[in-house]
Image 1 (tube, rainbow, N blue to C red):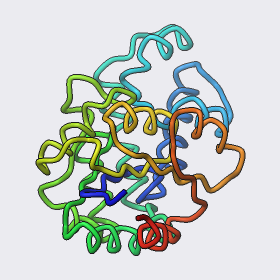
Image 2 (cartoon, rainbow, N blue to C red):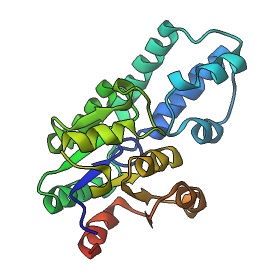
Image 3 (cartoon, helix red, strand yellow):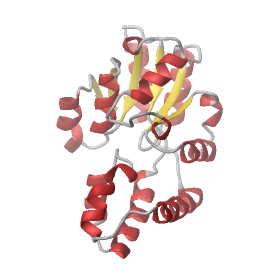
Image 4 (cartoon, rainbow, N blue to C red):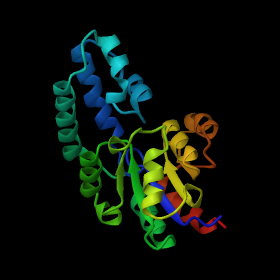
Length: 220
């Protein structure tokens, strides 16, 4: 089908932020009493927001998850991202192709806070593509896997979810896109993630963001 709009997730799709964010999170959780490997932290938290895992964090650390702790996490996270964030290879060509195919009807719909999303897109020179069309799960009644952030993006573009393509990389995000009625393509750089993404409802898997322009051209 011809997609009228294309909605991108941010972390892990446009910017390679997850390893940096989870390194900071792992270090801070270890300081609070919950030790795990980087791989374990990534497996548990990628696609989720820290604040929504409050109960698990408090149970594992035996301490309340305070706003001061969250503020410290955001500050340390942002410092790491400003210093070392890089664009996902191929993301710029994917965004440009999506912009061209839809005549500018693209948006970024992330579960992260707005400051983080805008800072990251600005750092990798993608912010101009999404100016005025950035949506944060922190500003919605529910974050992913609920569809709210994708429904808000589609509504802003005056389109039903069914006419949108969502590009995601996590099962949480795929679930949100499917719940919004959109077709979801999943960026899956490692085959180990394929089964879970397909089970969540992804219609197309691809290994590189550089594959997106060709996939859009091939889409009927």
